Length: 198
Image 1 (spheres, helix red, strand yellow):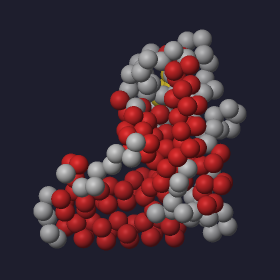
Image 2 (image 1 turned 60 degrees about the vertical axis):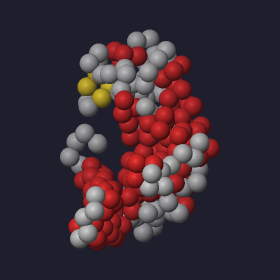
Image 3 (image 1 turned 45 degrees about the vertical axis):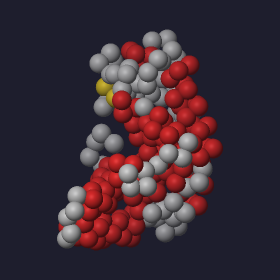
């Protein structure tokens, strides 16, 4: 989503919903009495507008991309939408030319959506295949970009991010280490019940 497209605008709107919800919780934790309700109400208005505008009434999905359907689960409360699972997220893979390019960073959101929909085993299989694919290519840390279809002879030369390719792309990228926290939450079950694990 590095270009200004309809999908990029829709995805950005869904991210705003997530930000308003998180902001509301943060402000409440900080003791703000009035503003959290305002942000929560705005998040609901934006989410309702996104559902009304972007959910396909025939397919019950948000297009065919992993990105938009993942964000619909995480931002719009679509975790019980079986069509999103059956038509999009159950088909997450990278072994044909038409499969999507999704960064390790965004793939963590995909894992979160799978878990929220009750498909942790499928998420674990995707971790083994996708992040395991980096390890199989010799990674000792997680890369800024990865695609299971890329050439294997010189992975660093072939890394692609932000529309370009080459050696400037990180091979030790913190944003790509999402499975580390995901395992803690979704496999070990260590989740905060209140702010700061109080």
